Amino acid sequence: MNQYSLLSMNDLSTADIFSILEDAQGFYNSYKDWQLPQHKALVANLFFEPSTRTHFSFASAELQLGCKIVDFVASASSVTKGETLYDTCKTFASIGYDVLVIRHMQDEYYKELENIDIPIINAGDGAGNHPSQCLLDLLTIYQEFGYFAGLKVLIVGDVAHSRVATSNKIALGKLGAEVYFAGPKIWQRAGYDFIDLDEGLKKADVVMMLRIQKERGAINTLSDEEYLHIYGLDQRRYDMLKEKAIIMHPAPVNRGVEIADELVEAPKSRIFKQMANGVSVRKAIIKRAFGYRPFKETL
Ligand code: CP
Image 1 (cartoon, helix red, strand yellow):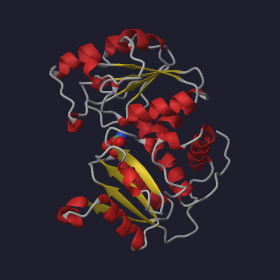
Image 2: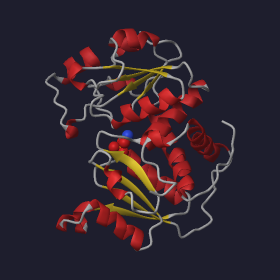
Image 3: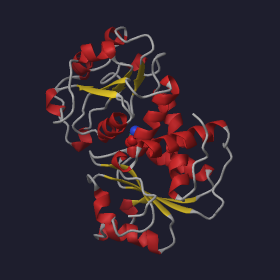
Image 4: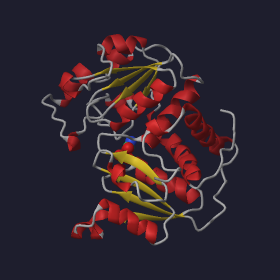
């Protein structure tokens, strides 16, 4: 596997994480127009699952960096003739692409790509990992608080099917935050610290709400109103939050299910800030994939 691949938050040390966050902030502060010196850099975005934010913020980041990009459509490719993921990726590497950004429904799909020697950026693997989402979450949290150690982060909802929950558990744990979980028993994971939702909300600095991932088999027998009342963030629960607490959500949001419609853009919400941060974080990830050193911008 290429040394500049980014597959899981397990691959990054705390120093690596801060380097990427510093570069992402650097793109905001001082390096808005920085581009890759090799203007013909070719990036293939291989999305085997639907995506709005990840796909198109990677595309935005790549274009801003001066890359040439292609957006692969599996249904119009030889995947329909039985081509394996390995052969698709090996083909892109053989025909001149420099970096692959891959989203795939299979957990840890990248384990079959160890012999691909160009950098692979994991844009989400099944219910496994979502490192670029995690890094934009970390940037959003750091911009708000300026530190991670001791922060109390509560992740709520369909934890069992959430790659965002797993990536944040790994990363925030490394950075010294306290990570708690709440949600329906059927979607709990072994080894994750589940607590009562209302107790968690009262002490949390960061509340991360999760969507029910029906596409991964999550079955919700409650109506939207019942789910919101029992497990979601409604006005009653919003009013329990600490003054400086923030609300996050990886999105897409199911408004009125895991979070009340009117709270998606409430003062404590950073949901659209997360999306904006996604572009600068992905610029930092792509810059790293091409082997460029960090800007060393101070956060
Ligand atoms: N947060 C996230 O991964 O959204 P998309 O599925 O739209 O990329």
